[in-house]
Length: 355
Ligand SMILES: Nc1ncnc2c1ncn2[C@@H]1O[C@H](COP(=O)(O)OP(=O)(O)OP(=O)(O)O)[C@@H](O)[C@H]1O
Image (cartoon, rainbow, N blue to C red):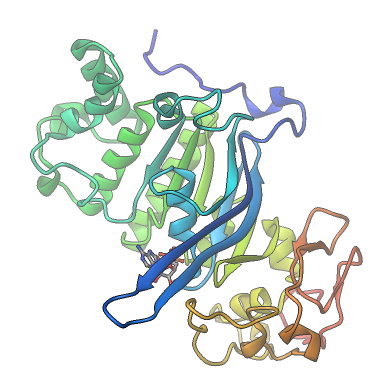
C-alpha cells in the first residue's frame, strides 16, 4: 500500500458541477502606504471586490500585467495576510468557523516562484519534504517514507537526492522539491504562483507535464497564476483576467481565447507574438502604463488605455456580465449581455476571435 492515497474521487465520478472547492466572494485588500510625518496617508487598492470559484478537480488560471493583484489574491486565499473585506469558503467552510486553521493549512498549499527562497537551506531535500507531515503529527519514520515516495513521484530519485541540500540541485529540481513538499500534506487545492516562470523553457515543459500528471493521479485542484498566456492556456480549464485589482473577464480558457470580449483581454492576447504574418492582428495595442493603484481611475479602470472608450466608461464601473450563454463573463460596458458579442468595433483581425 502506498502512503499517498487518492485525495478525491476521479473526475468522472464527481458527476457534474457540485459545491465549489473554493468560493471567493468580494475579496478586497487595500494596503496603507505613506503616512510618515506630515505625509498624506494613501491606499493601494491591490485587490478590489474579486469574486470567483474553483470546482473540485478544476484548474483556474489567473493572468494580468505585473501589479494587477495576482499574488495578493493568492496570499489572501492562503490566509497569509488579513483581508479588508470578502469571504473565502473552502469546501463550503470558512476558517475560524467550522474549519480550523490547521486543517485549512493541510487542505490548501502554495508553490512560489522562487524555488530557493521557499526552502530552508539547512534542511536536506528529504527533511524539507518530511517537515510538514512531522509538524502535523506524522511519525518521523512514516514522514521520511512519505518524503521518499513523493520524491519518486516528482522525478527525483531518493537514492540520489534525499541527502542533498537545496543549493546542490538545479532550479527545476528545486521546484520539484517544492511541489513534493506541497503535496506532502495531501492538499486538495494547490496554488501555483508563477511556479514555472523562473525555469528554462525545456524544464518548464517538464514541470508542467509533472503538474498535469500529479493532478490526474491525486485528483488535485489548481489555481495557476502566471503572466505567460501560453502556459495558462496549456494548463487551465478556466481563466480569470485581472486588471488593476479587479476581474475583467472570466470563463473557459478556449472560449476566452477564441472570443475575448473585454478590450484588455483582446489586447493582451493580441500582444502574443505570432510567427505567421497572416495571423498577426490589427487589434489596437494597449497604450501607456497601468494607472497608479493608489488612485485608480473612476468607472472602468481600463478606460484610460482603452481604444473603445465611451463617456460612460469614465463614470460607471461595469459589472461582470455574461457574454456567451452564461459560461463566460466580462466587465465592460461595450459587451452586450448574453449575446457573446461586444459593441466595441470589431477588429476582424484577431486570429480566431469573434468579438
Ligand atoms: N505589502 C504591500 N504594501 C503595499 N503595497 C503592496 C504590498 N504588496 C503588494 N502591493 C501592491 O499591490 C499591488 C498588487 O501587487 P501584486 O504583487 O499582488 O501584483 P501581481 O499581479 O502579483 O504582480 P507581479 O506579477 O509583478 O507579481 C501592486 O501595486 C503592489 O505594488
